[in-house]
Image 1 (cartoon, rainbow, N blue to C red):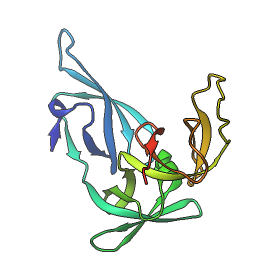
Image 2: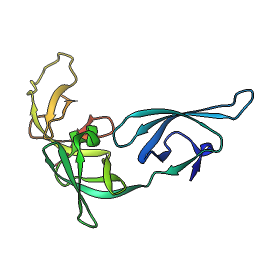
Image 3: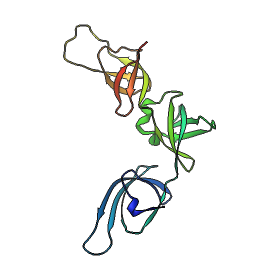
Image 4: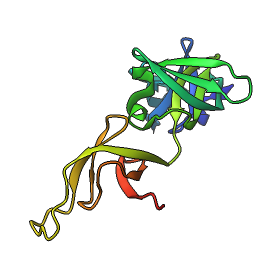
Length: 187
């Protein structure tokens, strides 16, 4: 069990049966009376923000979260299917739960899936993924218009800015933390 003294940004607790992560925290000691702990928490399942104030002595249940190594299998309607690498059990996640990670998911990509009470609620991607460029405008040699990038669409449908020398069909490395072009895949 956690007490209010354990509250800090990033702490994961169970509240009303759902996992929450503390995103802001403030400690206030009024002139007289008990200390107050103001928190702002985000529901890890549906993303709602909750503001709560607690007094000294209150306790919280830690969120029973588990990270598992899985691989992305396929997209079916508005759900994404992942397979546990150890048990071969499959987990489905809604598009909302996957979030921006959908821009980088290709078949058999190894990922870490966050589970709460055996339900998949989040995806942690590798920092870099290799994706093939499916559409971009050609580069005209000697073009000195000053533009140092152009839009490109990759195989997942994600659109990003790439250097002008990148052509359709090339494999590029994308940083999943910021969604930007990193480099070309050599070979």
